[in-house]
Length: 312
Length: 297
Image (cartoon, rainbow over all chains, first blue to last red; front, side):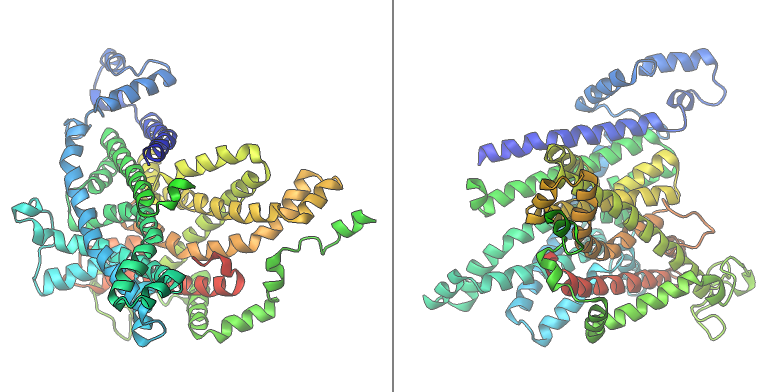
């Protein structure tokens, strides 16, 4: 198992370098010269030249890239052009809320999706099955912001049940109410795909010999379904959840923007709108690295859930 | 003599060929599926309305009339008016035009590039590792992030959205195409073609690509809905079409500011996206069941 994980780690290195390179390009290709932006509109040529020298902008591009990797490894992502704060500092403030939001969405979506999918599989062909499947197709086709708009309008505004702008604090410090609506919005897009795949996987497993054996042994139906069927059906579902992480990160950007949630996605969008390239580059890099890491974790979980992968 | 039999039109016979019904059979089978039928009616109506938008739309989508701002739906304005008094029905029709066009460009460009990568990876084993690693790196960037990055470099606009949608389409299509192409590579007629000295170009085009195209096509119809969702999300974030251009995602974002006074400004464009994507997904599912059941997970 250790070798497997190590191998997977090694494979993700080129992807990581790719991500870094794209982010580096983002700093290179920008239409404006960072030195001129920092120096301001009325700066003298010497000042700009001095800043260029200080930033290492006069060096060849490949060397600058190596410099850049070195700085990133040290956690130095430059300074925001707008607020003049360290980008790394802005990121440490925003990562927490984003992780919280994504975990919140998962906590809402995964059990719901698993339960609905299993229920649909067990009641295959019934009205319940059809309703669940119809809902999951609808869920897959729903723009994230549509669900958000409806929740904000009704739950947040008309019925005034829950807050819908900003984040009052961490969950353990009374922040739970403000998390519910954004997490529900983001999680709702996940329920459909999970339910759909769980249904297929459980159906497949229910026809397997070992399920018949379990039933023949006289095990209770709940035990058969939860322990034998669902556990084996989980393998493709876990992969799906990992693949959906891309979607979830994208959805997080939209959700954060809608609910004024102080996360990395909102930071990235705000930075792009105000042409704050160092911040945008840092935020985009963190999001991409997070995505790589989620995929890595999913692969490791996959090995754990399906010991056959190890031997293969 | 053998050369002729191999080069004859019957050469590209893969197992799926026999399962493929003729065009009439396909349409009939789709029509029998009520859901798929309804979905195709909705989708065709939307596409037709989008194509003929200037003739179908009751009003000029850019004509502002502040005296009529934020009216709820009525007989005069079926979907009401927005914050500057523009007719929302007309804007939704023009918006659907832009949204569908973005999705189509993304899927077609991404499908061609991804398909080519996948088929080349299957045909030239030497390239396989490199191409698939490239695809993995592309997968490392969620589409919305690509859109944000491109918008950061070149400024928000349709280019950013198209690049994001193309990059979002390529890796998955490349994987599906490679899978299908590897299957075809194992067929005897490929070996036969090579044995009689058919050139690589012909092998790739006439033997390999033609046999993979239906799989790629079905996969693309399945992806179309998701691509539209990504495109409209970028529009919603303000990275896509800029005002006053009508684009459904951006219209929803603009309506958000008036959500509590006039909720229809934001909800109607969102609902339009939902209906288009739902119809596309349902039709894609039905097409897959009929054309290529192997793609079913």
